[in-house]
Length: 524
Image (cartoon, rainbow, N blue to C red; front, side, top):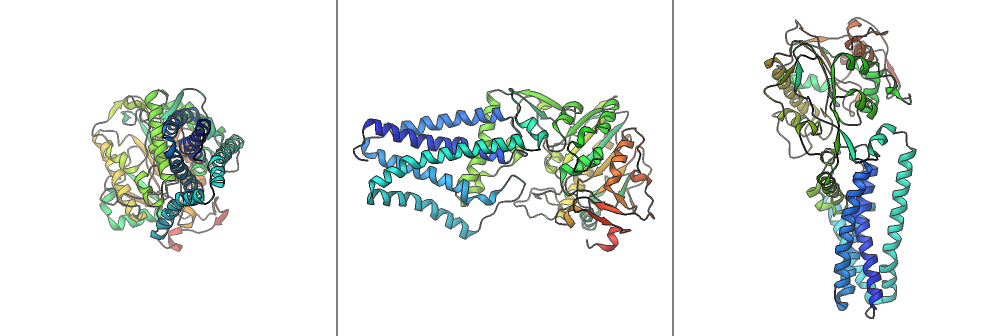
């Protein structure tokens, strides 16, 4: 291509710039966004505009560099951008398939994988140079047509992904993600530290907190629960589902996974809203967007401006780099869904709620805001869910190797401090508290043994009392209704005697259990 005309130079510069800008600037982050739509819950037009603006800037920069490069160096310039973009394409689409979705799983790479990956990156420009020297016509066809073909494939891929999302059953997610205006809604921290001098109902859901881990945590550090005054611990509990969404829907509505719209039954939320200032603190996947919008006072609109677009782009490209750089360098670009979703600025009431246990602990205030209005709070925390990285000394571990038992100690200390603050501000005794998990550790019989504890208003129990009643999570919906002031049809957790013999069903596996006490037959 030494005899390229100016038009040929323009055309090749345009193709290489389009390939670089669309591949890195738009396709990879957009594909990651659509793939992880349940974690990266940003309005679609916000993402598209942010990515589109950056892609246009990348295109302009690369095009000017290529087109303005002197003719003698133009081929080398295009070869460099082509090789880099093609390596990024291979890394993100074929060499990093093990990344999966943003599910909290730690990414690790062996030395062999890292070195092999680097060799692939080095081989691409060397192969391009070799072909260029041996057969310039073939090289010219490759560098001209391959980028265009890849861009077409990527456009088709995004179109198919978008169609599949439209046809999916995750309507609650789509309602939020595909919000079509310049206003987004966030589950904010508004009133998180406001409590009633009359009555509080507090439901704390700690993800994957296993009751066996709780038992072990007491052996490791019995003082970790010093703040747990007045609680009954239901140690003989079998859960319902091993996944958060199904489990929370079941406990708050009584509807099983098979129901197409479980939150059509919103009696519990209606009752609470009628009697309390209701706030639901947690990730968007906890309830449907309709439940948040109708019943959560901390579900607030926020206008999206330049800063929001800028922050969305910055966080999305951090993830993009994580996916497309060589394996040995991915550690420099670690990110999570919480980093991406926390893109709002403004007053404290517009800060997105972040359910990380240690962040919750570090942001606990010494003094609470008090109101005469009755308050209901549903507080979701990561609990023992991966990544487990909080030591029993409440320090962030350098890696994600903390055991479930040790993080249970940390969780106890965090909650103890929270309960102590309620006491110090005079609102603990008038607070009805239900502490539970959506499911237990998934590595432990698919999460069958979640933690369940309850403290009534003005409890006369000293410390923690243990009940061996054979509780099932099928008892939780009647319990929730009772808490909301409605007389339920079924038995609550308080209606189950310790000597009762009953069959309990774990819905995730469809198994029925006639075990009188699960702790008598299971290893901890």
